[in-house]
Length: 318
Ligand code: UD1
Image (cartoon, rainbow, N blue to C red; front, top):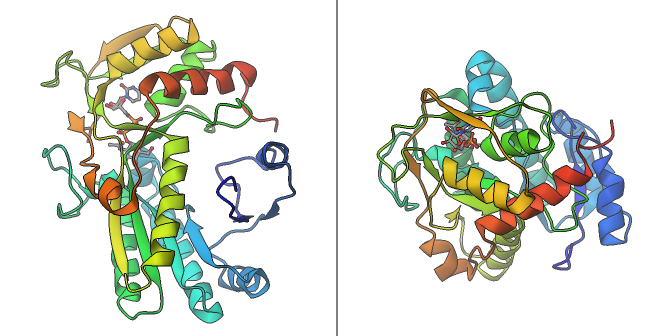
């Protein structure tokens, strides 16, 4: 919205809360049109497009927990592929040509090559990851007909919150991911962090990831929209959204302690199944082609996460 776009939101709220909406309106100073329904519903999705006169779609709708995806694979395939089918059908039916898709570094599978360039082959080891690989393939095939043009944005590890402290990450139940777990320990909702693996071949033995501030991530989407609108001949293109730098789990804990003034007790335990020692982007393509580069630091990610968590210890109101 700050870049001049007028979004319309559609969300099933299966993993979010509708109470975020008034806060978005407060931050933007305008009313935001939003619709609560499941985007797998082709008729409802198509009806939204019939009314919407949309220029473009940013498709974020998906389940994203690796462990859970092995316990309920059908739910993952149905949700992640089903939303993509309904959105593509609605786009074709209503002549909307531009799609920006939330993909993931998970599509690089088990490669140990770092930094990871976009040219690496894609594969996966779990149902969640396969849904992203499959959605990329579906989007490629549809884009090849010329009916849509698609940006595949491969996110590394999005963390942080806008500096206002009014909105932020509020996972339901026990967080799977590092940053929300750390911030719940810092705010006293969980006792201690378990650090998964202290024996990786990294400087401090803990795993390296490419953490990217959500505000940089958001700017990457705006840059991709801009690129597609000025490169109408491009059918599909993939871009990594990362910083190009790896940060270890213990470095993140130390940065969070410094940024929050809280202690984050932790214990080092065994490796988590399926984890790699080092994952970070080759971020050069996005800079060269989109003119986009991540600018926020690990310190920004920690202080912004803490501002949100401290002011909202229980997350969003129910
Ligand atoms: C994970 C998924 C990735 C998905 C992303 C969604 C795996 C293998 N990858 O990325 O596909 O797109 O989440 O946001 O699950 N860690 C701890 N203790 C914790 C939690 C995490 O030590 O309680 C460590 C992990 O071992 C890892 C790092 O922190 O080294 C980051 O973990 P996490 O935030 O879960 O992200 P990824 O595993 O990189």
